[in-house]
Length: 96
Image 1 (cartoon, one colour):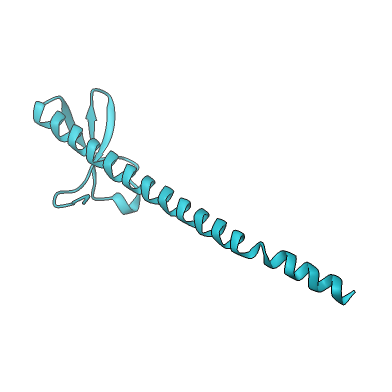
Image 2: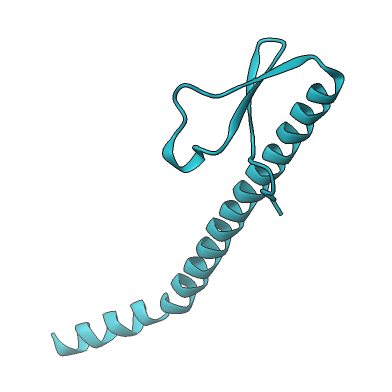
């Protein structure tokens, strides 16, 4: 019985490096995925702000406060551009 347990321990110890490597690869993939999502969201916010600013300069929109603004975004304004509502960050706010 003792021999059987030793053999099993030896057998499963051979899998340890593989498991460690797979775990490292998984963690790296999840980190990369998270960073890509953050970058996507940051760039989307910049594009939306740029489009809203361009529309404001072109005179095609009106500024109005949002009725249901979340507490963290209470200092933002909404811009209606041809029927589409977008958030504009407060003055002095930078996305970079």
